[in-house]
Image 1 (cartoon, rainbow over the protein chains, first blue to last red):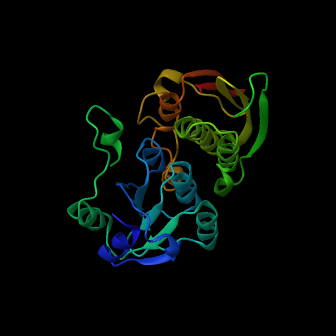
Image 2: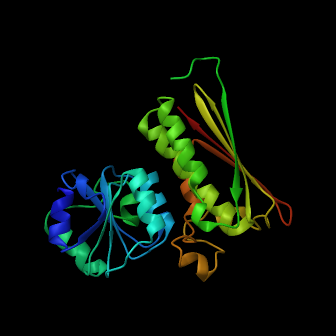
Length: 125
Length: 143
């Protein structure tokens, strides 16, 4: 799924990185706990979160997450946007709540971590 | 890639006063390991383990020191603080156990996953801790 499809499906608005909207996303993770995100191991993912602080962007950078979607219309700080630009991470904001945002992406075919036997999939995915 | 005889060392002071800057040392390591040509999975394991350690030092110990030693077959990360120490290491190693307060949870940490994640992503992890003195964690990742 392309980043621009996520934007359109969630009726979201780009906060930075719009020029990377053609990049492909292969998996998704929804969490407000960054340690749970750090237990998640998929590549080229999108993170949906209701948490707003610089560690969200830093965690995404550490995990090579391509795109972060803030739910419930939350807006990142300028410091977070600058950090995301430095790391090359797309940020967007949607009015959807976490459950609805995850549901829409799931319905459109995006999945979390699916490899059987890998317990990290139970934590976040 | 670095040559066989080379050992590269990094030293970082982890600022305990500023939660917002926690993880800066890990990001520098990530860039450096990438420049040195290490594989993606090695880079990720080292930086996640170090990042969790940095966060722990900031939220529990008012900061500390991080040292990384890179040799061709192994990367060693040593995190040392002068914090309160860990009362029960076995308990602290259990997923979901945390002594972090609600204000830390509100920041997205304190889920009791820090130490388990550090163990999960490294090949060895040793914890030396003394109440009221501090904690030293030594982790290695084989390349």
